[in-house]
Image (cartoon, rainbow over all chains, first blue to last red; front, side):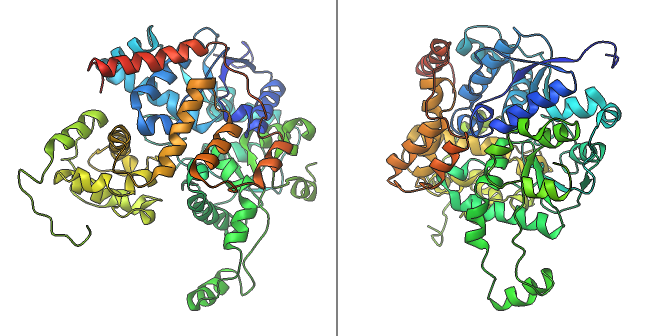
Length: 317
Length: 194
């Protein structure tokens, strides 16, 4: 497709989180696509993709739920745009497995009582922004570059793994988030935890696990000098944003052990541990902000760790 | 169990179980040569009594019950790091899924009922509403796990921020979802699916 000649247009699978705890991801995705003049039409009557719990205990159920959603998506024109990393991973995994395994495809077709739609391209919105809309055009469209904003791009687990499924980027050394940030005028920091797991859906059953893993991620971003973290997954956002206060309470006290005193003080330049709030942004919030979309329509009021002081500080509000 | 000597014989090695895991996961366990890369990258291995490479080793030795008796499979976050990095293409994430399904079906040896409970409620929500209803998920989990006060302060905050919906409407095509659940149950009854 030649950009500029035909208007890009997509069908859209928001997923459950984007209608609830990740509502600002949905709001900002719609605002961004509108600002870029890219079409986005929600798949009618879509239902839950099963996320991690479904495939954890019943792979056939998980594949069938996704296959049914894919066939619902066939009713809407355009490649399928997905924002949630978990939905994206499940839908792509289903297509991949059913293409490879005929007997599984037949079982799924019995379960959904119809043919499995395997050929509709499923694309993550970052893929659409960086590759189809294009980085150069994106850079041209920027009205308010995010100058001086140091961002830790956080990939998490499901955007790139396992290697043969998402086809989004390199599974060990991706760069799509960094590329997008540079196009928006922001500065991506180099940091150690950009692909580490945040504890994902243990947030309900084992919050202690989430606090430990997410603390390591926040700590790493602070050490790298980031002002904020950028995510593309509502679960990562939930763990890092909603539980940030709890994480501080659990891990905030200065480490008084011998090793903590020696290594801890060195790490923090001799002062107490760095306890800055780190606002967590969705990729679409930062992109829309750079496109000059009013901050009121980006769902910032739904966020727990208030990003406004940082944005005001950087003169982006 | 940890210090008990492992005697390997036709009686103590349950190879049938291993074959089931291989069929369900579509991955061979024999390919593993114990390099340990999976466990080295696993963010959850510190929470497990059998780290991922040992889970595969126990499978190679036909010791499925030892794995199911422990918590390892319920602490896997499905982050796919192991599968991504395996030099021998052992799909460990799929093997973990298969082990969880076998434990789920047997409903017996798992000690990690909280994780199982959360998964069960999540899937029940799909069957009842078509989509997740997070308020019900959290509330039902707290009620059923007996942790009435867990995240109590978080609830009102999330509701006021619009992140938790008080009410939920059912999907219009809820009958189709029920159909999927029913047909899968029937296929399993007839032995047409694992």
